[in-house]
Image (cartoon, rainbow, N blue to C red; front, side, top):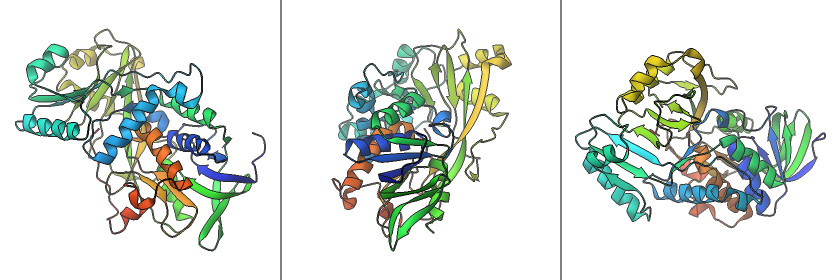
Length: 392
């Protein structure tokens, strides 16, 4: 686009995968969205630094439902979006959770039982011998594991671009929202550095910047940003290409294959809250720390680490945005009409984008009532402004 339109049915602020999915589902609901992104490209912030993975292995009913819906959408992405032969790089090699604790068998068996009760019946409980038979690269003192074959990963950028393209939305990159247009207790649009836009609704889907934008309306969103690292290792013959996402449940260190190499991450507990940033400065020691972390249960990583060259190791960092109860905020503000949120996914934005975007559109369109919405803004009343990290 060369000129910002002066009207839209709904303005979506934020062009990461959540904003792009929001625009797609709003369009599919019959609305005319404008997608506004401050950076010069879509999906250039948290989406670009994500592990790009998805799983249904949760225990909360609302999370299991959202992730199952999202995974089913990703499995049919080209058909659902109407983009023939569009490829999001879907790889369903599973998620493998491992533990070495004494109470691990009881905990994991109970979790699988709870998941089966939520109709997630394809999660498997694995005893140590079965783990080693099916996944011989696991060499630690495992006491139990769980596995679901339909979990996996994809290209988050391709998915975001696909959502944006299929939405038919007007996309404005390099445009900053500077304020909100109001009429009494109602939001009627946005002000930007490219001019004003009048709209029937505004959606804040700005990831780490959502709290700052809400502050322009004197709303203190209870969101906390934490730095999260990702290390990508170039091709290496010792890394099993057919492995699942493999997670040390006791520490949180995890890895998965990628292009002959691997992607590694670790949601470390010592990270402190940060202000939102376009470029997050990584900890240069993180590659050594995460390699040590994943080697605890997969000792081939010790040999990989000893043979790596510097040009094979690529370090990046982004930000998770967390809420006090580790659930996203999806839906309307309780006092300002026309203002909606789709943010605070705590590192689960890629895996939940389709389900979250569909729910948002149904709330905007009135197809779902807020009292029936487990991710409602209203639930946050009385919660302390702290966020509790969930191990991936």
